[in-house]
Image 1 (spheres, rainbow, N blue to C red):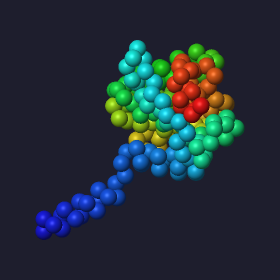
Image 2: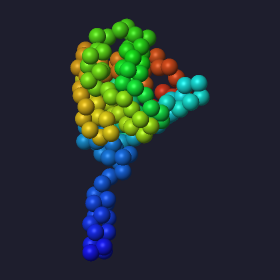
Image 3: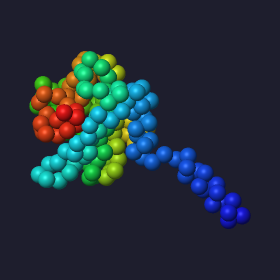
Image 4: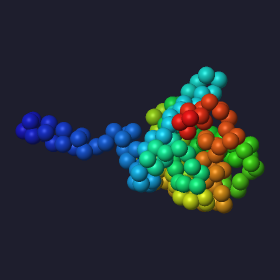
Length: 169
């Protein structure tokens, strides 16, 4: 009986992907052919906030004319308010405020160390979000791809070295 229970546990565990693998599989489903192009860790005053991974089809160079994904793995706990307000501040800083606070509140929940958010563009006007492998929402707004993804890989990011590492250049 003990051997049967152990065997069943092993079978169940074998079918359960590791969190990073599960998220990579989500990226591949959301963006067929997605592979990691680059990785970077964002720090604030020396403290790591999150690790980012850029997914492109076939790990190709970033092309704004094609869909791509960005995954953030949080290295500290942050409230929903922190995530939404930081995003709203970045929108304002990088090109003007956007009326998206309500949508962001539906997309983002508080994160704990190790939680992951994956954002995948779907054309220029939509970005889909997954939290720990579960679909949460889609942001819809004109040019949202360049505005949201540009926070991490645009021309006016907060850290040029972070962006260079993330885009793999």
